[in-house]
Amino acid sequence: MSDEHDPRGYIQAGDGGRFTQAMGDGTRVRLDVPDGEAGELRSLLGMWDAARRLLDAGAESGQAGQARRELGGRYESHVSAYGPVNRLDGPPPQGLPSQGGFRGDPYAPLVYALEHIDPDTGALCRAHVLTAQHDDPGAGIEPG
Image (cartoon, rainbow, N blue to C red):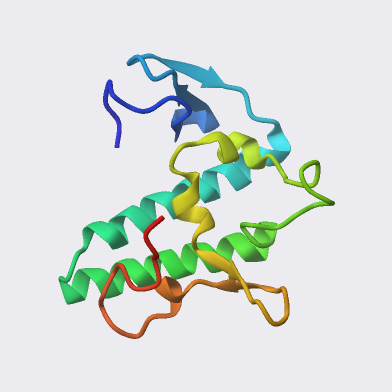
């Protein structure tokens, strides 16, 4: 996804480890991301791309299954490296990690929807879309 109509705040990873952000008017500006957050931002953007591929796969069983496995792998790698996508680093709102500015991306909610809070334990858990054993790519994604 990249054209002159990218919504304000949409972040893209570019060459050389740089990032850009859409201004909503067809222009993009360089997004300065702290070195310690660039890897996590790149991981989150990769999960967004994989989640879009899963949704775009529709009911095509082979593509949906492959896309789900890719997304699940990206999710597991992210959690191993950075912790849960929806983690808090302290009490809200100050405890919300910036994740390289990803929270401000208009497409971030798709990635944040990959986890939910278990009502019994309060633990963050994988959303059903990551664990579904069938090829309905929209399984586990509830309309917002």
